[in-house]
Amino acid sequence: MGYAVETLASGLTLARLLRRRVESVSGVVSTRMPGISRGSLEECRSGGKLPVQHARAFRGPGYVAVPIPDTSHDLAAQVGFYLEGGDGRDDLEWIARSAETVVIGAYDGEGYLFWRPVSGHDLSGSHHAG
Image (cartoon, rainbow, N blue to C red; front, top):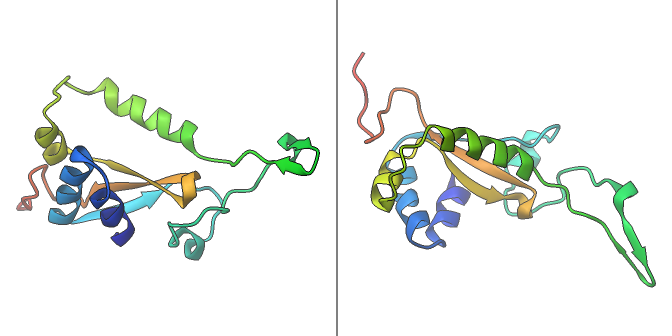
């Protein structure tokens, strides 16, 4: 969770407002990095976790450029899913207070972390009784 808070703190307006949400509500962080060991996943600041497709390497005189794998297609699908249910509000403080999912880039651009409130907490951070 420390990486998520640090990354949001270094962002601009919406990221900083989302940091307040992440810090004030009990939540969990998950990721979608298939086939990666838990120990490797806990190191969010470095990449090199996804297998590289060497067949797609570009070769030139004195260099080999290898595309860096990432999970951006998964993120795009998730964002599309959430946007379909949006109500069009654009007030940044309301968006941050109401956030049900916060997506944070990680693994040197290879993947993302997803923060969600722990079940039993409403959108304002109050604990539900019963």
